[in-house]
Image (cartoon, rainbow, N blue to C red; front, side, top):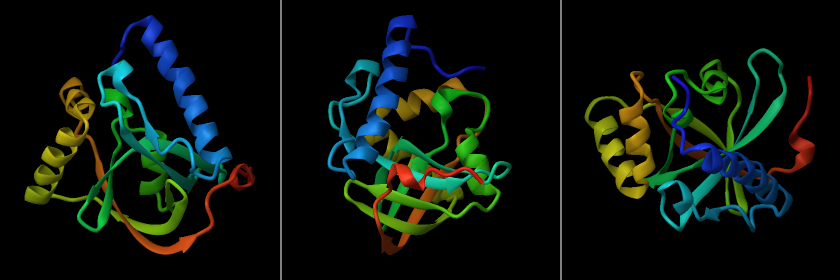
Amino acid sequence: MPRISYGPERDARLAQWAKQQLANYIDTGGVKGHVEDMSFIGGHRFETMLLIRYAGRKSGRTMIISLGYCQFGPEIAIIASLGGSDVHPQWYLNIKAGAPLAFQVATQAFACTWREPVGDEREELWRWMVRANPIWGTYRKATTRELPLLLLKPLEEIPVFTRADLTVA
C-alpha cells in the first residue's frame, strides 16, 4: 500500500514543501525549518521538525532527512511511518543496519544512540505522539505493519548539518 494520499493537489504541495523545508533547514543551520505549518495535511500549525543524518547501508552515502518529532522524557521520539505505507522507510532500514546516527533540532546537533521501546512504554509513547500530532494516528490506522517508534538519546553536541555532509562513498 502506498502512502496516504491527500489528493493530487495536496500531494504535490506536500512533495514541494518537503523539498523546500529540508533545504531551508540545512541552508540556515536550523534557524528556519524547525517549526512548520502542517495544517494543509491535517496537522497542527506549529509542528516541530528535526533532521537525521545517517549512512546508506548499501551505498555508504551520507543522507539527511527531515522528520516530525516529539520529546519524550530525556529522549527524542520519531516514527518510521512513511506516510502510512505498508513498507518501512529506507532511512529506518539503514539505521537498523547499524548506520551511525546523528540528529539536529533547530540550531543544535548531536551524535546519538537509539532504541525501539516495547510493551507498555511503546503504547505510552504512541498515545503521547498522537496527542502531539494526530497525523501519526492516521498513519497507524492506514497500514497493516507495526510502525517503528525510535527513541533517540543525545550524546555529545556536534556541528550542525551542512550540504557538505552529503557525500557519495
